[in-house]
Length: 184
Image: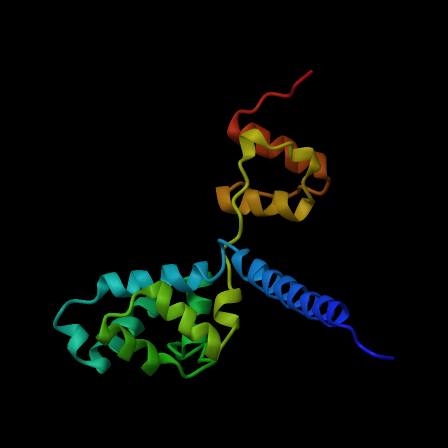
């Protein structure tokens, strides 16, 4: 079969269009970043960064001391982030060894967002850690929530759940606490 100039041109145009479609698809995926990505990492490192003085930034060991002080007092997701960073305590230990990378980056003045992007390449779990979403109790239909979520609301607000077994009991207790009246 002999190729004509028009069929070669059509084949070339098709290749270029396929390549262009592929590039657009790849770029489109990268543009849709999750706004909550690395939120615990960024906030934890920003808090540590704010604690550092100009004098402490000159020495990695002083920076690591500030990191240790912060992590000794932290709780919840921040405590888990400290574990991932390699700044644990005696009872919890550590998971990784990026403590020196973080302290040297702080010494060079790298901000928390950029630092977390770098750390993500070494240990992806640092950016997978996220804060739990807060539920707006007054604007949410509590009857549509799971009992686990209702328990979490009670725990966060200091509402006693002793003796509560049914979902309606949790809902009524939360409504009473917040002064929400039932709609008839």
